[in-house]
Length: 230
Ligand SMILES: C[S@@+](CC[C@H](N)C(=O)[O-])C[C@H]1O[C@@H](n2cnc3c(N)ncnc32)[C@H](O)[C@@H]1O
Image (tube, rainbow, N blue to C red; front, top):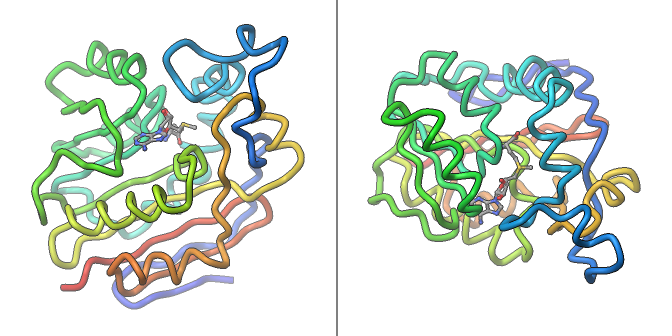
C-alpha cells in the first residue's frame, strides 16, 4: 500500500524493522550507570555504539532513509537535527546535499562531526528547541530517531515549532522515529526516552503550524513529513 499526500511525495509501505529503542526512561542512575552511560550525552554507551554500527546503517540508511527522503528535493539548504554519530549526515552528503547544517545537543558528538566533515557541514552545538538559524532559512529539515530523546512533550513541540520557523515557505520537515516496545525501553535504560505517539503527531505538527501533514505507521516505526505553508 502506498500513502500519498499532495505535493509531499509518498511513503512506500515496507517492513522497517527496528530492533532497539523505547520506553519512558530517565531512569535514576544505578549500579550500572557509569558502565552504560556515555560521557557528556543523554545516549547510553550501548545506544551510542548501536547508532554507529553497521547494523544501524543497514536499517536506517539503507531501508528507512530512502522512504523518509522519497521525492524530497535535496538541492537547497538542508538542516539535520540530532545527528548523533552521523550516519544520516554521511548519507545526506552521499545523496548530494551540498548545503548541510546540523544541530546536535551533545557537545562531544557535535565535535566529532566537526572534525570529520570540516567545512562540508556547518555543525552547531545546541538544542533544536532553540535553533540558531533565521526564520525561513532552510528548505528541508531532517529529523531521524531523535524526538524520543527529547525529555518532555512540550520540548518536542518546541522543536517542531522551531523546525516550522526556520523552514522557508513550502519547505518540508521529514523524519522517522521508533514506536514503543519493551525491547526499546530496555535499550534506553539510563537514556532519555520519551517516545512520541504517532497517533498524536499529526495534530502536533498541525499545531506547530505545518500543513500537508503525513504520518505513516509501520510495525516498529513511523515516518512523518509536513510542509511549511507556501
Ligand atoms: C539516537 S540519536 C540519532 C542519530 C541519528 N539521527 C540517526 O538516526 O542515526 C539521537 C540524537 O539526538 C540528539 N538530541 C537529543 N535531544 C536533542 C535536542 N534537543 N537538540 C538536538 N539534538 C538532540 C542526541 O544527543 C543524539 O545524538
